[in-house]
Structure formats: C-alpha cells, structure tokens
Image (cartoon, rainbow, N blue to C red; front, top):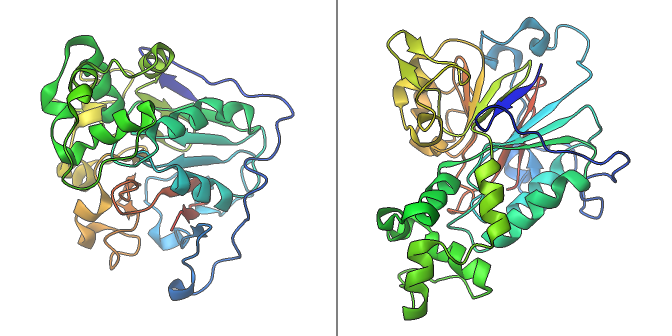
Length: 316
C-alpha cells in the first residue's frame, strides 16, 4: 500500500477523465544508438538490464512475471528548469489512473523559471489521470526556514541559486553569472516575502517521503541510527531525509529499494554504479539505491526511472 509523510501522509487528488499528459508535446522515437539519442524533445535512456537490477528488488520487478498493472515514474530534482520538465514528461508513455508520478523535490532555485515550475506542478494533477506525489526537497525546506526566521547562509551563496527564484517570482530576468542582488531585492530575498502566501502554504504541505510496493522515495537519503538505516515512518531524524549527503548510504545500505535525488550523480562513486558507470552524468544505480539527480537546472538534465520495468527517461 502506498504511503507518504508530511508528518503522516499527503496525497494529491487527480481528475477522473483528465487528458493525456501534455498531449501537444511531441513524443520521442524508440531508443536509438547512444550517439544519436540526444534530441530537443527528450529521450529514453537505456533500461536497467536484468543483471543490473539491484538484488533487493522483489522478483516481480525483474520482469520474470507478467507486467504489474501499475507503474511508478520517479523524477529527479528540477531546479527551475521548466523546459527540461516539459521534455521529460513528453518522453514518458501515455499515463493512466493506475500510474504514479513521484517527484523527489527541489523544484526551486538555480534555473530561470522556478515560479513556472511550481505553478505547473501544482496544476499537474488536473492534467493527468495519474496520481501525482510531490515530495519536499532541501531547497523548499530552506526557503521555509527563510520565511519563518531568516537564513542568510542559505540565500547568499550564489551556487544555491536563490536570487534566480526571487527574480522568477517577481517577473524579472534571471541573474547572469556573477550578478548580485539589487538594493530592492535584499529584504525580500532575506525574508522570502516575494513568495505568494499560497505557495508558502503549499511548500509546508509537501511530504518528506513516499512508499509503494516498489520502493521508498526520499529527497536525500534514509537517516542512519544506532541500529542501521531507519525507515521514514519511524525515524526521529526527519530533516536528514532532505539534507543528508552520505556516501556510506549509497555504498552500505541494504534493504528495500530507495530512490533519491539531492546529491548529483556525478559526485557519487562511478565505479560502484551498475548503470553506465562510464557516464558520470547518468543515473546512479547501487545494490539497493538509485540516484536520479542529474544536475537539472545546473547544466545537466532531468531523469526519470520507471518502476518496476527499470526504464530510464531523460530530458537531454
């Protein structure tokens, strides 16, 4: 049974006879040789082969039994890149009411269109028959701290891309590299007052995790306690699911499959990845974890993994 947690669970209603997701966007052709696969409309990556699937997958996900009636599409960090999101969703197969879209968080910052990404995702349940699950990322959590009590250490560093979010919500051009904030941007940036109240309320409602038959989905990692890695429903270290960067997690965790973002795959040990280890920008697959932050909004692209098939979709 699928479940998630805000403190407990948040679900997103979906319409009954909603149209096919983004019907006006062109679909990509079947998988071509690697050097020819990159298009302006997204692509399908290599599926996870049987020998590549983590051993902790239930047998049904090894495609040795008839296909399951439901599919889950886990989508990585977006970071304000609406174009990449459109390309990725256009690359997915038609969705139905048995499918689930799980977004692992970080919709804001860095990319030029954070406000549009938020508006698109909030409207998405009415545009697809699939269930839509939107998790909280550390950037949404960071902005909530800014709104509640201020956090200059989060909004000032240029790599965090917070100025791009402010400009997006104010309808201003995105900052160019090296550009600082204008005088009239200091207070709203430091207090987050540029966010509409309904967007702040929406961010507060985003759950920290989600689970279905196939996997556990979190933004960053599972917390590690005295007796090993903790399930999201029992841990007291909830913020670790948003902020933790723990290479031991990808090396050592053994348990139910975990899909996560947050740490760009290029910074995970490529020699341990069971999926295209020669491509450091690609999705990262370990024994029981799959990393899908492929630096969207930071010069990379957006990645989706379909379960239980293991098919990979990309915006590049």
